[in-house]
Image (cartoon, rainbow, N blue to C red):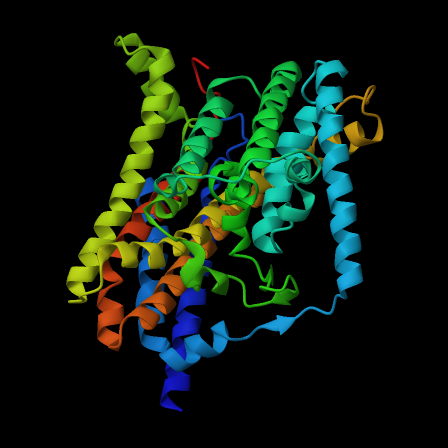
Length: 464
């Protein structure tokens, strides 16, 4: 009874803390990432950021005191089979593959021959609104359907029709090509007018298609497991979702986020780096659209820094900072826990918890964008070659408060997952708790960085 009362009180305090933070955000009326006008916070920025960071810190304390191994294990083991027959699964997979191939062909054709206005061009709207914003959300909110929808898996069929080489992928490369590919794609998206130039977007999609089909034909499934950054992104986000496929391909349901506790999710240091890269690039995409970055970039270029070097330098520096901070937190946690486990093992096990943060920030970053431009997407789908004037949804002022909620929910989920993994790794309760001190501090830093970006009004990046 005492433990039950303590858990109830702890949950109530946690909910109250989150409510206070949300209320503060709603009163602050901070500008969203899509706002064109600058809005100032009605409360001091330091108080706004410290409130969000404090919620994450308090959640760690509450999680430490109101949970035990039995409770966490009971939640983790709640798995249910979803009643879909094998025939139904094959039919759904076939329909998804057809939709993916038709969608890719439509993007290439309409992008090349459709309207030049990006808000009327189907290719631009499908890629950025429908796919990168909307579809990506489904992978961590519902489940990863990308293996069925992915049109580039046609490259695997070519291996059956044509003489195919035996896959020979150097193990030492790990997932580093996917890390480089992810950073490269985000850099290209930031520094080029991909969102405004349908012809350029078509060229990039065509080049990606040729590279991916060739890679799938040469390396087979290894290409999508290790090299292709898009498949890796959706697979990583899919571990957050409540739906997944077991080893026999049957759909099953679980408590959202518990998939991040699986040991095989991060296999080596390159997988750890990919998680850090995914967390950073979503942050970077928002950072370069803030007024402080615009001012900094203008000053840097005015001081002699070449504009073409500024954005990749910032991209790599931020990635190094996020990855370095995480590795420091793992090493410090190992020391605090007085553990003999290898730092590499701890880094692999705790890294997936950061995916909950990435998912929370992604939905905070893109949900408003998706809602605002959904009518334009529907109009383009209805008449791909001659859509009407684009229509956008005007979001209410309170909508920006949701951004804080999603950011904080992602961080709270990350705290829970890391705590569950610590219980699995360490025999002593206090070892598990002490191992989380530094990691929680790193998560507070990630939280405050995300909240700072969300609180800034939108500003078009210069020199791109």
